[in-house]
Length: 454
Ligand code: PLP
Image (cartoon, rainbow, N blue to C red; front, top):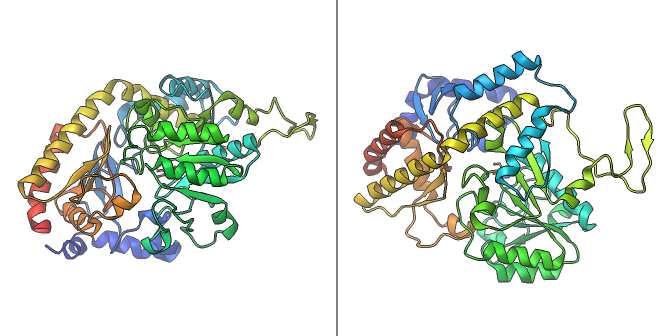
C-alpha cells in the first residue's frame, strides 16, 4: 500500500480544513508538534477511546491528548464532576482561594510524599518555569543543567538539545548545548549545561566543571516517558546534586499517574527536591503542578518576603518573595476534572496496567510471527513501538537509531485500519481501552504489518 495515497482519498475534508487553517495560522497549526506530512487529520468529535475525523472516519485513539487522557474522552464521572462544580458552586472561576485547591494538594501528596508544599500553574511548561525560578532563588546560581533528548516545554533555557542532529550534538559523554529553535538568545543556550542520560560518571564530571554555577538539574526520570533509568542512575544523580548543592527537579509531566500512580520517583525510590507534573493530573485540561521541599517552596510564600498588595501598600520584609502568579491558577473546573480523574484511576490503574502489559505481549508476538525486529518500551500505561534489533535502548541517541521512517509508514497504514496515534508517537492507553478495542487493534496490526513491513 501507499499509505499517503489512500490517506488522501479518505481525508478530503481534513485537507480542506487544513487549507482554511493555513489562511489564519502559521502552517495551519496551534502547536508545531501537531503537524505531520502530508497534513494531519482534523477531528470532529471523540468519545471513550474513539476519535472521529471530519470525513466521518472512526479511529481507536492511542494519542489520548499526548497522554493527558487516562480516562479516555469525556468520561461520564468527570463530566458529572464538572457539571456539579458549575451547578453547586455557581461559577467556573473565583479568583480567590477555595476548597478544591487544598483537596487536590492532599490527593497528590498521598502518591507523591516528596511534594511537601505545592503550587498550581496552567501547563507543564509553566510548572517547569516556576521550578527553575525556585531553584535559582534557592541557590543564587543561574545556570541550568538538563539532559540531551529531554523535553520540558517551550522554555528558552530548556529548548536546548531536545532534538540535536548527530553532527551538532558532540560526543555522548560531553554533549554540546544546541538550540532547538530560532529566536533564542545565545546566552540562554550557553547557560544551559547538557548531560548524557544513564551515564552517571559523565554527569558527575560535567557538573563538577560547572558546579559553582548550576542551580538545578532537571530530568525526565524516565526519558521520553519510556526509557528506564539504569539501576542506580537516579540514586547517583541524587548523590552528585546533593554534594554540589544543586536542586534536583524531576519533570514527571508525562510520567505522573502513567508509569505508576507514584510516578518514576515512586517506582525507583529516589526523592527529588522538586517535582513538576501536568497532563493526567489535570484530567485533560490545562494544568501544571510544582511541589517539593518546604524550604524551597516557601520562597514563594507571600507571608515571607516583601510583597505588594492590591491597595498599593507594601508588606516590608528584607527580601522580596519569589513571584509566582496566574489568573487561572487553581481553576475550579480543572481541579474538579483532576480530582475526579484521580478518584477513578486510584481504583482502576492496576487493571489498566495489566491490560497494557497483555497488549504489549500480543503486539510483540505478532511482530515475531513475521520475524520483524520490534521492541515495546515503557512501563505502566504508556509505551512506544520501536522497530529495532538493538537489545538495549538507554538514551536519546539509541532511540534515534531505531527505524523511525518505517514506524511512521506503519502508523499511517494503521489509520486505514482505524487505529490512530500521531505517526511515530507513544501509545497511551486509557480505562476506555477495553479488551475489545485492544483485540481490534491487534487485528489491524495483523493486516498492516505484512503490507508495510515485509
Ligand atoms: N515536560 C514534559 C516531560 C512533557 O512531556 C511536556 C509536554 O509534552 C511538558 C513538560 C510541557 O507540558 P505542556 O505541554 O503542558 O506545557
